[in-house]
Image 1 (tube, rainbow, N blue to C red):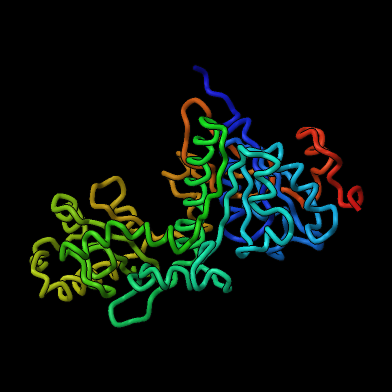
Image 2: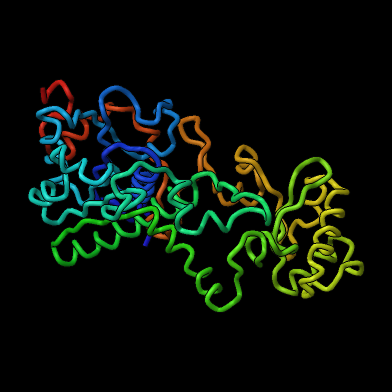
Length: 376
């Protein structure tokens, strides 16, 4: 079958109630995969306070502006929900209900609807109604406590671990599973995606290692947390860094050979000499620049890579060859992922401008006019 340009979710309709962080990213991922995503923006400007035309998480979407605190805004959202397959919202528990667009109201209009709820703490529990951000959510799961050097404070991994890995991706998995069920049975449901749940789930392998005695419950003391001298980062002569992941013996042998000091290193299996091993490797990396070391290890099985900045990453030869980053509407941005042989996703539209697509959405979804003026 010849590939199409529509994406595997072509024909699926998604309503996104505008928010920040993991909800918009999850909706972008669904849009990248071909879903028709309509974002319901609030009056008064973007939630994030940045130029909507540069907000990459708004790509492949269309936007309408509705005031959910008005008498008629919720009615318009329910009209959209009646024709949608999925609705995503990221308010605190109970807010959507108070606005008249909660699960009961939406499912009453559309029993097949998948209602995705994105929060940090989840829909119930002692902290459910309290404010929070990524750093607090990952802190209580034990995930943040694993990251950082021994003897130092936990290192903050931007908001990738909680908001996007533990939040957005779990919401998308849940929504797609519920959508499969809805299409098979005609019955929709609510997906409660909490960042604390998703992030805790991500630590499953580590918990297994901990139970087996193969993981110490402290930072910088384990094989995969920087405690191991052949799994970590090293500074180069020009202030850059190289990432080393030479875990397997054959890869480690290649690493030390190319590093040029294989015959001068202590036994890697002697944990008592790991500090000595790390110091020797660090001293060697400090003798050349990042570019020079990149050339040394290029194409080898040493499992060594340069640590690049966000602006540098798109030019990396491998990423460039794969098209891992694309430029669309003047914005360099990550390409949709993952990839599909028959129904590839793509960047079809630039980031949506609030309210710009009201007439088009009303026509395509066959709902009453969606401009804010029309519902006053």
